[in-house]
Length: 408
Image (cartoon, rainbow, N blue to C red):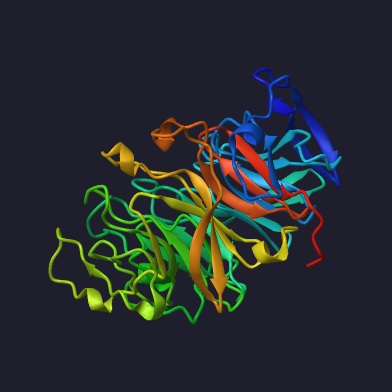
């Protein structure tokens, strides 16, 4: 087992012509807590891939070099975590760049590593004398309220960025908040955006709105955009249901802050229309796009990934996986929500049911904010394993299937 030592040694390493700032990792005599604590389906195993990651590891991306990159949000850094000897543990931590304001979402695209920070999107590319950095978008609404910014490139080659709300309840002062925005890779506005001709220039970049805080999103094999959604607060332990999967509609309004989707589970063909938040009035919730799949309130779904490129058994590859961060604001201990990784079984393009895939970060009756760890981001690595970030514990875990599986 390895961990990030409290005493670090900074050196410069040249890799393929690029310079990296390296934080060396030293051997640890600690047992692997993950393999002891976390419960998985039969045949799966988990181990700590890297730990002692100060600054809250959040989102991850696999580079063209096959190695894992991660944002350390409170540390202001983007790091590379190579596993060159392929033993399932990071060899070291290499700082790609630092001094960023709340870096969160990141993704490789055409040789550039795009990074979303609190008010901007930048991109990085390795060169002979270091990392080249460019500004792509410089005027994303500021870091007040929900300050995480997540980005992904869609199958259309466009850059999508989610921006959370400024408050826990109430209309936004800036229409680009509580929304998913859409740009060209250079930061310009695509001509086919739903509001590209709007008189308000701020609305021209909006792809979908009424999403209080979509911490992550992805595309289905059919090309549909699905997002997690953390809804309104202060309606008690049971309301509103957590909108775990929202089928995002271009130009659509998805309810927040006026409406939410009632009930639990699959909302087939939008049979359960959105209903009004009792604190609001004057908005017709029948005009809002309801969630596709809901879960108990305060589950806090964050990162999501498909397992199509994994080395999991075939039955697990076509599933969607979502990291639940666990409850806040729940008064009844019997209703505390778990911090876990949930698997969604998808049939005919629909998430028909969900089941727990990885759990054990918290003790019975414990709030997740007091737990040993809380999952945040999910990604499938070049080795076919699933990597799970843990901002609370400062770790990244590797989950793999131990048995033999047929080739994808």
